[in-house]
Length: 221
Ligand SMILES: N[C@@H](CCC(=O)N[C@@H](CS)C(=O)NCC(=O)O)C(=O)O
Image 1 (tube, helix red, strand yellow):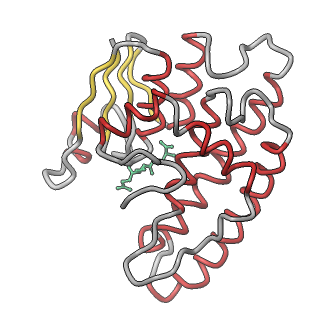
Image 2 (cartoon, rainbow, N blue to C red):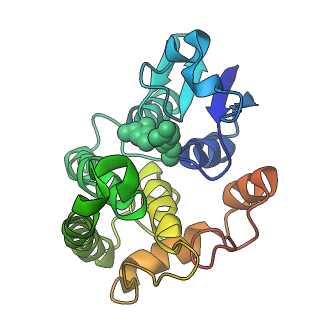
């Protein structure tokens, strides 16, 4: 039995969808930020920086979204090429690319106040983050256009769910401000998101977190 520590619409969403898709039993525990639960000694013992998500497993707690997703895929032999599969190398390369380049760039675009260092530094910081996010999206879109099984609208994969969740977040902008990134050029990634959001696992996660039915392509904030 796994225990997912989550907050609604945080990176725990990709883990939840993956758990649903695998059909494995799990419980979840909502972290109450207002009560400071992320900073509690108990949670810091699971995730030293107090970030979401963390997954408790029979092998001990795991943190870092990508590590959790890959561990689940390997443990259950689904949603990613297996270690001996010929396409494992290509998959791993782009999975790590998404987690190293796209995920942080998206966080920097959306939450510059957390990362830029000072309000004065924010405009330049956001410009750079937008450029980094667009570069990563262009590369991943090129990869998705070739429709590999591990980044496809028709076949669920941990990379597909991870990237689709990041696309979801890019539909968010602070009230009264425009979207920072125009997603329309990334047609292959849009197709992946559109295909995967119709899967029962994604719809179930959407219902569990109250996120509406088009969670990746037309999120309702
Ligand atoms: N690299 C980490 C990033 C985790 C992360 O930044 N999580 C966000 C939520 S999506 C968080 O916990 N934010 C709360 C905060 O920054 O205090 C991962 O992939 O697990």
